[in-house]
Image (cartoon, rainbow, N blue to C red):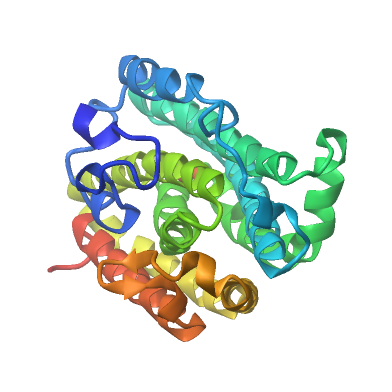
Amino acid sequence: MESRQTGTVAREGDGDRKTLVQDALETSLDVRTCDLDFWFREVATRFGALRRGRRDDAVVPPWMLEDGPLRTSIMEEFGFRARTEEAAVRSITHMVRCAPSLAVMDFYATQLVDEARHAFVFRHHLVDLGVEADRVDAEVERISGDKVSAIIEPLARFIQPAIASEDFIGMVVFLAIIAEGALAPAAEMSTLRWAEVDPPAAEIGYGTNLDEIRHLGVGTSLVREHVLRHPHERARLLEMIEAGLGLFARLPLAEALVHRERLFQEGLRQHHDRFHAFEFVKGRPLVDTTVEERLGLQQRWSDEMRTARIIQMGLVEA
Ligand code: FE
Ligand code: FE
């Protein structure tokens, strides 16, 4: 477990670097390996040594403090992600309440704190960017209020029946495939995109991705164990996934992602000379990538992760 969790800096020793799209498909994570002892020892201490999710002395580069497309892009991204994390905290309260065993309850209690931490670090990056601390909540609302009603609220309504009927495993499927699962590729892309452009943002995002690897892994193992014991549940859970992904596809999330990528592209164009040497992925300079290329890659990860996860859960045959 320890090696999986090392490193809090996005570009620190690439060999050690964990990626959401690969490491979250690791099958050894479950509520036994990720118990409270593990969480206090490996997770709480690591993040306790940081300040708002990044090293104490991390500095936002001057070009991120100037008004412009890069700054707008990160503010829109982190403002929205702060709200999705908040929604996760609120829905996980029901998972803690309905957990079928104490080990499962403990795990979701830790995930609840993880998600609250994520909302906290995303919000506070806006402070790093120069927003006054007591204005942050209003600023987040200004930036992402419309996306909360268009994207987050329909998802929250979708999961209401499972909450009302205390369908615990339905809530796990929702979180691991439809909500967090579907947002994971964008989170992975974010750390790559910001690594040189806004290093503290990349560091914050990388830390949340390490948590996400654990959340998705444990969620997957819970569904797998459930389906092994109750094979007749397969059809119902698959139906739920289909309905949830159908809803997801109708939400204006893609528009929001395209908008942020376009802003980022415009910023890259303005700062071409500054970032020209930085490789986004091996052999591919970031400044040469396009909006379509980055979103296409993200889409591919999304499809691959979802397929792999549904197979791992035992919902369909490989
Ligand atoms: Fe999160
Ligand atoms: Fe999570």
